[in-house]
Image (cartoon, rainbow, N blue to C red; front, side, top):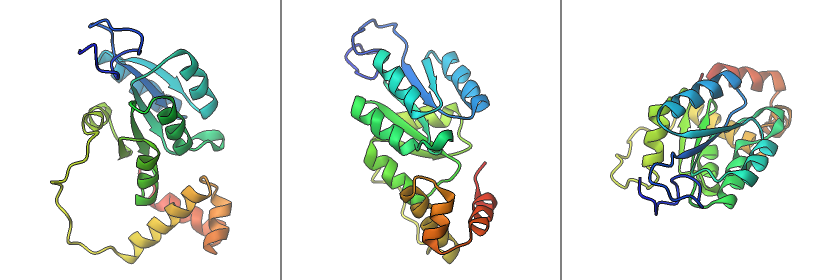
Length: 193
């Protein structure tokens, strides 16, 4: 590793054999454990947090160069808020957002708040590490000729409103003029697992 790369190890340590530091913000304990073990096998020092308060406490003691953040966290915390806090702590940190509720609206917000990439679940360690390596944009990506369907537009509108209400299902349903059970059914039907 290059000791001048700010993403390698803690900022105050310059040892060539210092492992990379990763923060995983995920409230699904089983998935977090699996991801942690996988990254540890690849030489990362991994810290875990399940909510924003834990992230803030960890940042007082550690300076990870990488972070993986779940978009929807238990306890009402938003992954977008975590992304913002991580980016404010260190603008050079490479942050990948994972979500089972992928949408253009939340992807755009995550990138604007400081994430370098946005992946739909299920994503594995290879996908996440590749996303860390693709922090820069790619102007050669092919543009699609396919038009957006009405179902896709509805899905995007729902997710835009979910992001605006900080993932409050009742408030989202109210703003969309939809019954809460109808919205819950739509979300359950389309959830990426």
